[in-house]
Structure formats: C-alpha cells, structure tokens
Amino acid sequence: MLILDAHLDLAMNAVEWNRDLSQPLEHLRAREAHRRDKPDRGHGTVSFEAMRRAGIGLCVATQIARVEHDAYSPVAGWASQAQAWAMTRAQRAWYDAMEEAGEIRILRNLQDLDHHVALWSAPAASSPDRRPIGCILSLEGADSLVTLDHLERSHADGLRAIGPAHYGPGVYAQGTSTTGGFNPRGRELLAAMRRLGMILDVTHLSDECLVEALDLFDGPIWASHHLCRALVPHQRQLPDEHLRLLAQRDAVIGLALDAWMVVPGWVRGQSTPESTGASLRHVADHADHIAQVTGSARHVGIGTDLDGAFGYEQTPSEVQSIADIVQLGDILLARGWSRPDVEGVFSGNFLRVLRGAWA
Ligand SMILES: [Zn+2]
Image (tube, rainbow, N blue to C red):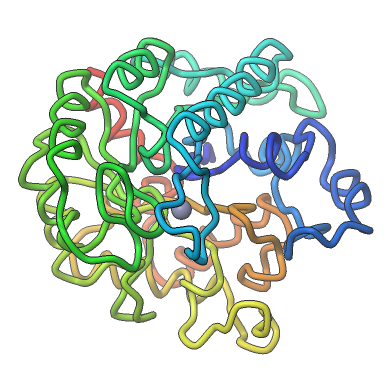
C-alpha cells in the first residue's frame, strides 16, 4: 500500500540536526549517540531507507524557519526575516542535492504526481528499493517570506503549500498558543497564495486565524499534522467545530505521532511511551473521532511529524521507526474500517486534495 506522509521536516533534520537521511537509521543513531545538544539525539526514526521499507513513497516535505518576536520566547527563532529566509534556502539546497542524488523527486504538478504514483504502485524493481521518494514542498510558518516577491520566487521554484504560522506570534498570522486573527500582511499572503494555486495548511494557526482563513481563502486546504482537542485538550489540537468546518471544505487532517498530542497529561522530558502507555491505538482513537465528528473517513490522513524535534522518546510505543506506522492500518482494519477507507487514510485522501489543487 502506497503511503503519503503529509508532514516531515526532512531538511530541518539534515541542515539543523546534521543528519544524513540517505544513511540507515542505525548509522544515524550511532553517529549522534554521544551528543546531548538536543533531547532527541540518538532517537531518530526517519531515514529514506525506513520510508521506502514501509512504502512511504510520497511526503509533504517542509522548509521551516521562524522569526523570534520576543527574545524571551520559549520557542527559538531567527532574529530577522532575512536570516529565516537564508535558512529555508539552505534547506531547499539540500532537497535539490537529494534530488540530484536520486533519493527524492520534487513533485510540482499533476503530471509529476501521476507519474510518481504509477512508479510506486508497481513493485520495486530492485531490492533494496531505490525508488525516489516524491516530495511536495511546503513551508511551515511563513515568517521567512520577506516579501510577497519571495513567495512568487518560492512558488516558481516548486513550493506548493504554506502554513502561515508556527508556534507563537508570526509575521503574517498568529500561531499555536496565541489568539487573534490575520494582520493585513497575512491577508495579502492568503490572496497571493490563492492567485498562485497553492494549498493552505491550517495546522498551527490560532483558533481565530483558522476560522478567518476558511473565510478568506477559497482554495485547497489541509491540516497537515493535527489531532483532536476533544481527546487531548490543547490549543494545538482541532476542536470539533473546526473538524466540521474543515470537512465542509473537503479538507484532510494528517494524524500526527507526537506523543504529547496523542495522549492527555504528557509532560515533556518526563513522560515516556511506557509511563503513559501511548500507543498507535490512541492515534486510531483520534482517527475514529475525526470520522465520527465529520461523518466520513475521507478527512483522515497521515501527517506523522516524526523527527520534528522529537524522537522515539516521544512517540507511540510501537513507533521506533517511521516504518512502524503501517501497524496503524491493522488497528483501523481490526476496528472495522474498510480497506478502501484505510487506503484513503494512508494516501488516497491527501492525493484527492493534491489532485484537486493541481487539476
Ligand atoms: Zn509542526
């Protein structure tokens, strides 16, 4: 079964965590076993090999660099938009290098997508599988876009989706754990994205921005890596009313595998998958909840966010590597989800949004 993961910070791992994702996971872990600069050192779960092993032939791959609006902010960022822009260009240069090396293929249009899905729908021609992983480029947090001209350039260069904000206040929009709507620059950004035919990622928006975005932006929408507020309360999660609003727009919500979002009461740095019992069964609870609230399985997808500044110390206990996410399919089937619905979760639903956006 072809899998599409709608949220992976691949380039951040390469450029900021100094991980060579073309190496096997064991190599990546061993190389940083002695490092203590980040809490997830030695706990990586993502490599190109692990993705291919699970059939993850497609992903939404991010560029990410935020601006620090408050020097005392708990979330680190760059001091200026120019610096953030430079970081996203470095990340983009790495994607280009991986494409040249045959590890990935940057998908820009419907023809690319159809060709790539056909490539991955046939059995691998070699063992181990060496097929390139199709990447749809997305910008997580728009702070790095110094002007709308930078947006135009990025789009011409292959950027196809944007989440306007990340954690905290942003240049264009209010992000996770904030309140308030879009500022005038943010509204201009949405209009420019629409003109360019880009996809809007509502993940990380404040509640007010999310509702406003659905009003201001009539193009294709997804929530790339998100779970349910009804099951684990936090502003980062989607309340039921937002699930319904997103379903009205035929949007898809990518199930995230960051354990603090999966089970209630997680304390960062203290809780463990064992102490909380965090499991893919809990992720399936979120999938069930989305399907129940929206009345359909067509709004559920996968957006793991694995290695998004956390490793297997903060994932559901079954997930030691990204290849383990296939077990979620068995759990959903055992709960009575139909095979076509599970295939929709694993790729079909996000492919529907992409095809609609690129038709
Ligand atoms: Zn995120």
